Image 1 (tube, one colour):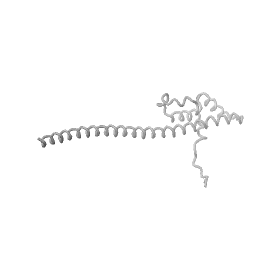
Image 2: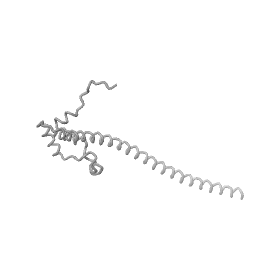
Image 3: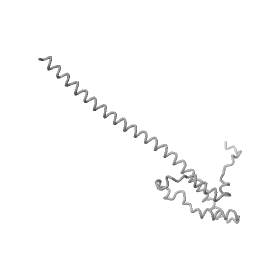
Image 4: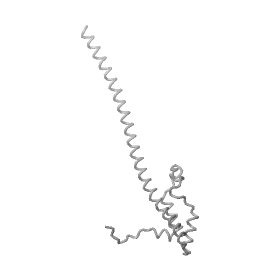
Length: 142
């Protein structure tokens, strides 16, 4: 009878161990899945943030060049008719400053390509846009 009791205990122990092993395995699987999802999100978000930051900085600097250029023209009192016409065209574009708070509303502007804005400026302000194009100078900055 003692052998039978030992066999029952062993069977019960195996059943409990198997059940516990299944629970632990399920928990580890869920935790591993959640960690994988979190890591994937973090990587995608970081990459997207980096790209958005670089694009926004590039466009913001270029747009600021236009505004600063026309502010400087006004201060210098230029009389060049072509540049004065472009200054008026720039005003008609009604572009907000690069630091304007409306740019911080990402969801309102997420489908608006930034390069289109620069293309619109280049089309409306060809002389000024041409001034900002880098021409591969031969100056050696050592």
